[in-house]
Image 1: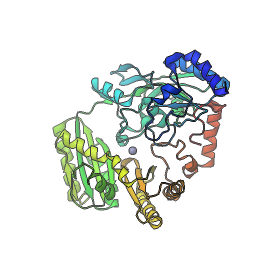
Image 2: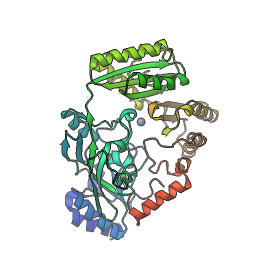
Image 3: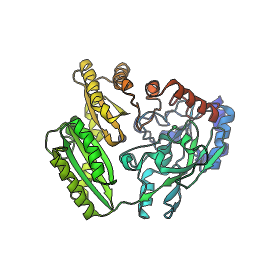
Image 4: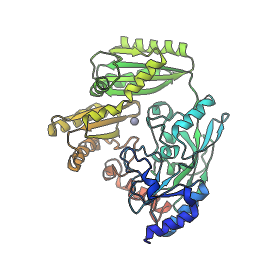
Length: 461
Ligand code: ZN
């Protein structure tokens, strides 16, 4: 019996047959989206409670056994990859909604619950959990917390960080830190929950979360507009935000190439506007009164049109039309037509974006004349998604593309990850966005919370 096998034997005694899976059972589990999943881990730990997880981590800590916490395995930066020496940890058996409190507008859940289940539960009570992203059916709350997930409505409601009031986490040595506070305001020293939000499972394993809920909006208005140039686009953002009086909930921009990609066969989406323009925007407003909000929405768009800020607009008139516009925006699968592709999610100041994208395109095309670069994203959050295809998926080509994408960010002080995280995928590029002293402080925190380095080793830095 080697070292890993003897730890597994000890864990098996602690967790029981349902709480620990090995070879055969693992082979039948899904590992999608190129994450590597747990297919190479010798075992998956599946504790049923915080106490069981604490006991399991105590054993791992005593033996210096590495553990990789995993959520719904829908991440994009290989933050959950395992190897033959590391154990996968899944909280899929800890998937209860423990309580919902409509008065204080909070919900307390276990970390293994899928995002969509939380959204639906909130709606049953006339409330909303506003975080939303395409992987909602599989992504878990624990994963959303650990990666500080973003998505489509950050402009109005913030990222996961802004929607967590309290949490419970288990540290590497099995210590349970219960910080399940339900208050929005709580200035009692260090905000400990933030250590575990966005740290990709490297500082502790999140087991339970108190989520902040909002009132469920009673109206939704959506327009799809064409914009004549980039400067006008930034002006549209501030003008429409002002005109909609705080109800703007999405401002999703598409560069022309992406709009063409998702509206031409084999894509099934129809073009809401046919005007030829360099930029297109999905504008969404969530409010309280469908008729009154619709009137205000249309007045605002008319003003924008008269001011020349938009050159064409289509306003969705039914739920089916609203859903169709969102479906077009979210049809990122069309990018497979340019395979092999690389996906990036960067953020930078609005006034740097146009020159940044132009510089990236020039550098890509001078090296690969047929290169494609599909750009779209949450412009209101300063976040762009770039999906490049240069016709070469070799490690050398991939690195050269990364050098262009990240190299052009460096002088502009941009971030190599707006919402996907670092994982192992972006680890070599962290110094583009973080100073030596920042990374040193991250290491100090890691050392303090996980001195043996057993939690998700080799991720982030
Ligand atoms: Zn996104």
